[in-house]
Length: 436
Image (cartoon, rainbow, N blue to C red; front, side, top):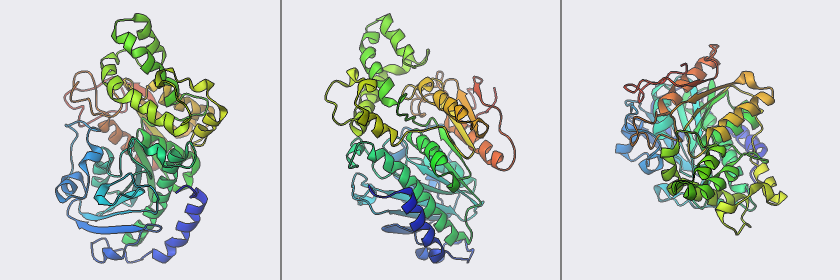
């Protein structure tokens, strides 16, 4: 994947489209073995009674470990979506993804419901997870709505993903190319199954997957009609980025935990929201140091000091250029809806989506963006069940944002950007309003 570029991808897969397309228009499972995924090294087909996790868990067509901890227990699970699933992988030299026992990266899944609404949703995995990571948070609902759904592992997974590149920044850069690759291939497979290309293609993603949505709409917008970004990671060459706000958090947390008010204020000044303090012990123990270690290893492998003492601003220009490879600009060219929780304690909203919203405005693209800040939302919904009275789940808000985007693409303007403070504790697991 190291030499694969978007131009090569587009040329290769565009040439493959007419060769593999079918005009049959059939949507049943007959002849599914004839479906080909352009560029794929392996593709396996299955005719399923239910493409949602209700069916795929029971039938072994998902990997629950990929998506465990991303949603709350109360998120509704749809069912009864028959169709075709294609699992496989594109050529790659790395072997961090062992799903299906394949020990092969660049794995993907494409699901196509029998009752298709003409749309396609493409996702990249959050964090460093594999291709099924979005099955509950995103896939279930869009499949139930009639969309085809495609997801990729981004070309490398796990806590040593940074080993998958010949130069600093290459592993993250591969993520972007793998989403582009899958989008082109999925359009071709949809054409073969239904006899026509998607009428609308939507990029959607959570955390690192949200970053991928942003990057795609900035760099290859012609592939998409719009996107939904759920608290996407922000990479900017000059900062902020993960390596600018995580080291101060790591450095100040021990003193804060010992009662030092100056350390407490330092964490707030670093962007962590007042009121999120109850989340800091867990994030300090589980996320902050590990996240800093692996992303610093990706962009600055030559650093040998303490992660708490890491100072991105003073690091060599080559480190900044490595981040620059994958940086965002705000120059989106298709409608984008962003959602983010105000209590996010991994990607603080003040250091992430607040900044990206300003970047979009400064780039003159504000009319293409809606930004909804949800009071009480954390980074992913895995802790909602532990703090049901202090956190609100964002998965229902993603579903509302997705519906708002499809309406936007149909000519109905979504609500203005805002901070939503109102929440009904009785229905927060199943519904979410985009207006206060």
